[in-house]
Image 1 (tube, rainbow, N blue to C red):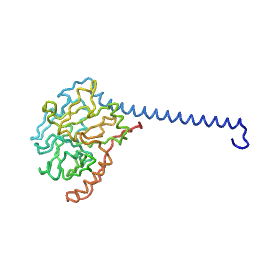
Image 2 (tube, one colour):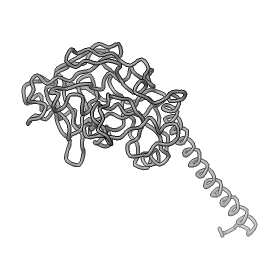
Image 3 (cartoon, one colour):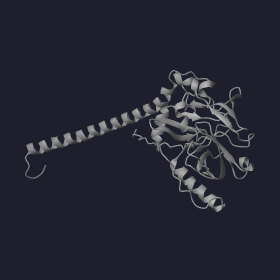
Image 4 (cartoon, rainbow, N blue to C red):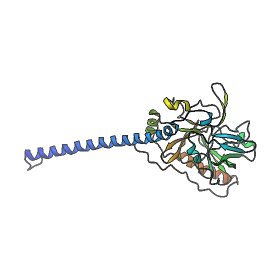
Length: 312
């Protein structure tokens, strides 16, 4: 007790202090609860991005195939007007549709534009300079605009991530034209946030490649399907999934946010980590300069979806 203070004054002050401490604890609990509610609402918005587009539709080749017609030899493509997420097609042309040679790559293995010059692949399935696709020169990466125009670009350099990652960034000979959409990345998520989104089974959109798929090894076309990988789909989403096959590596996967598509991972590669990708972009430019195919660094930066991810 403070000298000169009566016992009554002391206990009044003590009671007030205890009340303040209790108020602080209560406010903290309320803040945490509201933060949790904010993240839950955010997760619900991602879920609605998929479920609202599936509503009233029946899964079939006619609603999942990205193209109604295609001819790789002639370079002619017609996008599917009945695609279940047709309103998102203007955001899909940055997903590569074909790469020579057909017997090695062709429609297999994904690739998605992350700047107007850089494309993101899996490290274990990309145009390696020591062989593979790069035995074919020029190395073409083909895209198709939303209004069915074919755009062929040349890949001139690439750099792989370290062994603890499975990403590779490639450099194109020039900027892609305006009709080729640049994927926006999902803002960085914490490990807890990622785990929470998987725990509550928030669905995503995968833009897959054509190929033979299990269990019967039947030929399938390039499709837009519902994920995420290795999370069983339930209810109305179940018919919209499919079995991943060897050749799907690099398939870009997006959350459908209120602000549009947000790239967050590649099939077979793990997270599209912005810090890792930015480092690879710089290293890819440096490699191209050293090899004499680029005069100076491109200065290209990643774009991010305009969404705020609340604390979990």
